[in-house]
Amino acid sequence: MKAQCAIACCMWMVLCFASLVQGRAEQAQQKKAYTEIAIYDGDLSNSQVQLTLGQWGTGLVEEVEGAGYMSRGKMLRLTIYSLVEGGCFIFGKPIEIPGRQSSLYIVMWVKFIGAPTERVPEEVSPYGTTPEIGGGAAEYQPGADFKGGIPGVVPSAPVAGVGRVTANLTTLRLVLDFGKGWSELNYEVPFEILKPEQTGWVRLPIPLANARGLPIEPGLKLQRLLIGADKADELFIGRMLFVHDEEPLRATIKSSWKDEYDFDVSRNIEEVRHLPKVFIGAINMPIDFWIEVDEGASITEVLWDFDKSDGVNWEKPNAKGNIVRMFYPKPATYIVSVMVRDLLGLKEPLIVERKVKVLK
Image (cartoon, rainbow, N blue to C red):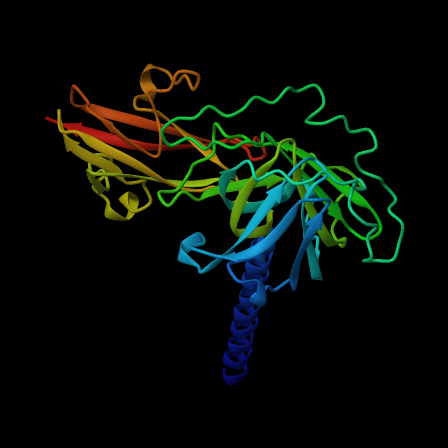
C-alpha cells in the first residue's frame, strides 16, 4: 500500500513538473511572438543598443533638451533635406533580427515641426561614407534604380484639419545596414489614419514587410539605420522601438449596462457559468459601448453593427470608433458585432460579438 502511494505521489509530481515546463514553454513562445527593443527612450546615455547619432549628407539627428514623450526631459531632433540627406542611427550593440520580415516594425513617437532652414548644398554620396561597420562590401546597393517616392505613386500632401497630422514630407525613406548588405523601404506616411495624442505626439509604426534589397532574416544584425524623406522636414522623436509582432488582434467589448449571466437560458448555475455574459438594460435607456483593443504595433479601426439579425454590412457599419452610443427602440435580444481591422493591412481582421438584452 505504501509503495502504491509512493508511486502515485511520484507520478503526480512528474505531471506537475511537466505541466510547469509546458506552461513556461508556452509563455516563452508567447513572449517571442511580440518583442520590443528600445532604440531610443528619452535618454541617449541609457540606450540598451548603445546608440550614437550622426549625419547623412547635410541632414542630422541629434539629442536636444525639451519636453519629450511622456514628459521626458530629452528627445531627438531629426533634420531631413532629401531622400539621401537625413539622420544616421548607429548601434554600438547591433540589433539581432528576431523574426520574419513580415512581422517587423520600426515604431516612433514623433512630432512634425515643418521645413527646416535651408543649408548650403554640398556634394554627398548616396548613403554618406562607406560603412565602417562589419568590414564587408555591401551585396546590394540601395537606390541604384530609385527615381524618388514610391514607384508608380504620386504622394499627396496631408490636408490640415482638427485632430489631423500634417507635415512637409509625404514619404520617409529607411535604409537598413546589416554590414554584409542593405535593405531599404520607401514608406508613404499614412497621415489620414495617424492618431495624435492630446500632447501632440503621434505613434508612427513603419512596417518593414515591403523593404527590398537584402532579405531581412532572423540572425541578421542591424548595425545602422538611415532616415531621409522626399521633402525637407524636421521632426522630434520622443521614443523609438524595433518591434517584432506576430500577435493577432485582440479586443474586449464593455458597456454602461449591467453585465450578467442570462438566467432565462438555464436555471442550472453550473451551466450558466459556461455561457457568455449579457448586457442587460431597459428600453430607451441609452447604452454606451466601448472596446479595449490590443493592436500591438499596428493601427486599427473599429466598426460596429448593433443588430446582427437584420444583416451585417461592414462597408456601411452602424458606427465607427472605440466609443459609441446606441438606443434600442423595443424589447428584444440583440447581437452586437464589432470588427477590428488593421489599417496597415498586416494582421487578420477580428470580429467580436456580444449579446444585449433589452427589457421593458
